[in-house]
Image 1: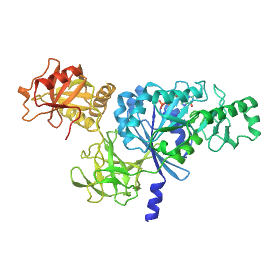
Image 2: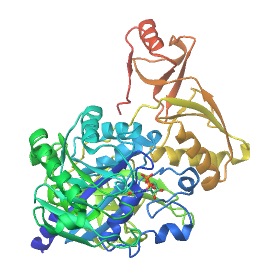
Image 3: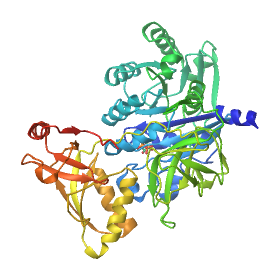
Image 4: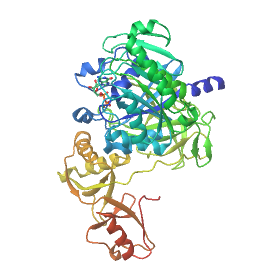
Length: 530
Ligand code: GDP
């Protein structure tokens, strides 16, 4: 029993995939599923829908806008590893969602477009990754097309992102003449055969770099150029240091083309060799060993109405230790109650399936009857373990929101409440005001559109939104606080959060200082402390 459990934990690899939109994250994810045998023909999902959207897209809004709004989860096996991929939204307005997803991942894969290099969102998402301190692997994509000089690209990654890099492999032939990759650690060349437009796994010839066969396969000139580049890399570049990789200080770089499958397998295998199984996580009781028997996990994402037919709400749990079994009851530590984890599901390539058992590193979804919050810990025994919380980003955009039809007030309030519990928006209210008119704060303005769209689609409520000029929110800490005696500036607004705690919305930093000065004994905080 125990032996099987350990085997399962140790074969788990859980990573998040990030990129600037259009760099090829969806395509690479799909190709990884293809190599894992989880789908039989890449592109089949896309062509059926006649759109550029693949298996990881769930919400209709994504199709409309061409951006991934929510993160999704997929599991597949490869070479006896059990891999969990967490997809993340590329658009910066959803970086909060990305951050929560990264909390559930043990490492990250960053996809970069060979022609475009480090783009705006790559930078932002990379920063979010860095905050987590997890290993970051780089896949440079679209080598089948013209792009930058690989040496310059390496330099760009180091300069713009501020992380050292180590090319694990090196491209042979660029600018539309991509033939293969050179594996630096094995001193091996892998030359790919033209496949069926990347629909199926691509065949290749692998061998020692000095083998004459490669001079024929790639041509004398390219071979010669490669030999020179290898030498240059060896003298000029960083040394490989796995410890630095694991600390997120050095990013291993792979070259390839997700579209043609060239370099997908070398990347996957190289990545799997370097990543670790789930590692111990910090909690209020110290580090929790994933191999301990006590089942623990935390909720990093809540999503309502994923399946419009069922009007369900799902809480996503990252399992951190112990074994999950269907029908299990666990301690919901924050509210100190025993709850049964109902309708547990796992997410396979294109489907959801009922999960019988799951292990550390896995992500499962359970039915949420409205009792879970993001960051909640679940724990099998009575040890009251609580994992470190997931910080909420302070909203930077605010709007006044109300239902167009006052008869729809109930659905309006319910919709807003549920969407705020998912962490997509934060809700405030003017003191003494009713719930007809709410103030909504978001980190990125696109979240307003998502709110509007979802309220209409999922709750049947048309809303009106009036954007407000505020850019900052501060929680007020003051003894004997009294709304009427609190002195504000002309351009600030007092309100309360969903727990009834006072907050002030500000247009600029200057007013924050002013209000602090005018109300002695007041501390204005960036985050709410419960
Ligand atoms: P995402 O927004 O990062 O998920 O990007 P997608 O995977 O949707 O890819 C964006 C576009 O780039 C699509 O039209 C893909 O077909 C294309 N694409 C993805 N990978 C490659 C590649 O390796 N080579 C080329 N030429 N195009 C690619």
